[in-house]
Image (cartoon, rainbow over all chains, first blue to last red; front, side):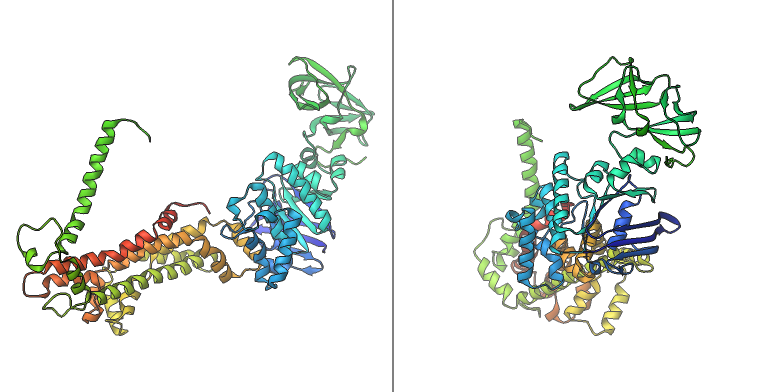
Length: 351
Length: 283
């Protein structure tokens, strides 16, 4: 297995730099998810590790070998593509064996490995079918099978679940996680879906506009988002971002509502409040004008605006709740659940 | 469109039957003419029903010297020449176009688009336009009266190159990337992935190009002087003028009939792939 080290990695197309000095280390056997909105450079980063994109400057190391100039086939990696990229004219068995055949591995060894991968993924029944005769989920498994038979040092996943329907996606997500834990292969997984990222990754690298916003465990990202972007990106529904002020031992929102407990420094701040941290409290200071409710069963999402302003807010309430649109509901929040950001730099204010 | 109107059905049937009659009548007359003896064919009116000399004409045309009085190769020899020419043109065009389209689509080299346009521009230079210089070159290379001379000048094809380029562009990039990760080099990728994925297009093009090659008239007429190298399409015309007597319609028509068989066979045999290759866009 292998450690992957990214050192001061830059990717530019002509004069346009799309990845800016990315650093990071992915430990042996670790599952790292690169997450970010579309166009943030996450796929580019993955493809650079795979060797499908050239490196403009910086270094990529896999298991202490600098691989910058190496052909993809020599990097000892396997990749699962978004559209699976199965060879349509080959049977499932041939698809899985193709890479091994090129490596001139003996017929019996190929058969053994294909059978083993097929058993792990439970695709033994359709080894002789063509990809077009398979459903989306089955193709997905075959694509993973093709990666497994190679027995590589690194797995790379490029949004492998985005073509599946919602239910299958949840199921395959768990399977990928189990499989990775069982095989213990260092993996990089690219997605734009933050739920997928949170559930799969040992650590998450949040990319935005080619910059690494934060690189840490899911809980770190949730509890201590380093930037406003991470705060808004991680967590569902998204965090409420409100302008406010810190002064004299309390925080004050735009409409004058106060949260007791001040900040390290007085002045303008940006407050981040997670919808699930707001608790209904008739005497609460945070009053929301009701817009509409989303009933999810286990909980209810209230969409509204902060009373007296037009700042949109979401609150997540347990159980079933309803109220007239236009009426006002009161909430409170404890000070240590409020995240503070510097409005100038959008970075977290450490406390 | 499903409609249930008896009158409309009747009208469409009449139109279709008229169409078939117009297309089929000349072929019928060819067949009828090929089954009478030479004398009957000189009398008016021409017969509309088959006569009894079909097999006799068939043997005389295919294996005999064909026409009496002329120094013309037996028809089986012409058929063989035509077949060789058509196959060499079709296969050669496909091979060259596949390779050049592969180079243009999958390799980055200086003036790539320049080369593409140079190939594309040759579309404007059919054989008829460049016939004198081409003849000069072929003659200097000593390729007159040979299969090479018949096929090589016609073998480069901008149309086929362009078509394969379009086909290759529909193959998803991931296929290439996936093959690279699997360790396939360019030629391996070409043989294992690109060719199988273009199978139906190759078949469709083969049909078109085979018929194109088979129907060549002007070029073979120019470069073959030896009667052993004549192709069947040009011979039919020569037969009309061959003998000093009146044209032997029964033999000429039999030759025409024989000349039709190989293209028809190719079309029928490859029909399914042909339609797939021209309509299928999904890879």
